Amino acid sequence: MAISPEQETNWIQAARSGDLEAFNRLVLAHQDRVYSLAYRIMGEPAAAADAAQDAFINAWRRLETYRGGAFQSWLLRITANTCYDALRYSKRRPATGIEDLPGAETDDGPVLVADDLTPEQSLQQRELAQAIQQCINALQPDQRLVLVMCDVQEMSYQEVAETSGANLGTVKSRLSRARAAVRQCLGAVEELLPGGWRQREKS
Image (tube, rainbow, N blue to C red; front, side, top):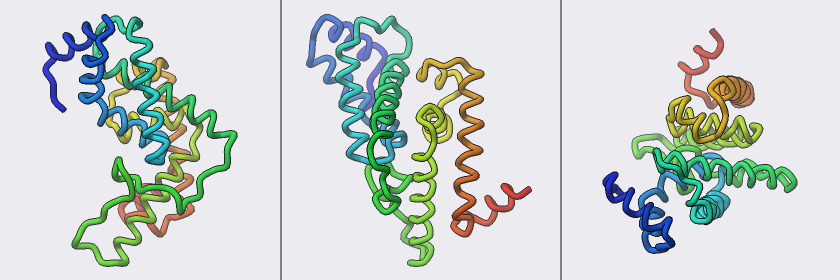
């Protein structure tokens, strides 16, 4: 849902005054990005939906802390923190098996494959997507947040720093460690990786 900066500013001001309908308009405008971030971090649709809902509830309760600037960045920071809290809680619960993981290429369920792929290629693509998501899920929560925001959401280091509340050096360090961990993890399923990727990683 595209909105103009003027609309967003008016809705924010109204919401800060207690207008729930104005806040609901903000939710509609930003829900796709919030859910997308939550899904990539949580790795499971139901958990992502819960985290996104909790993030909007937290945003409503904390509107007085918004001091201007990019509202979306402020909202995504709350989403990231909400997911981080959920991840820390989930560490005390049994891990999800790979067969229960969604594909890594969609925001709402299993990966969709191209029509021109053979059944064998389709299966390989699904297995690779599951392997990638499993490797992401195995990261420490702070590393997972940075990897998802940088490499999946394609946010800049500065945006990630603002969203996560970490400084640039910390963001780069966490990202480097996360990428290395994912590369190492994917080594166990090297046969699923594209040939060009394997060659680059070996060089």
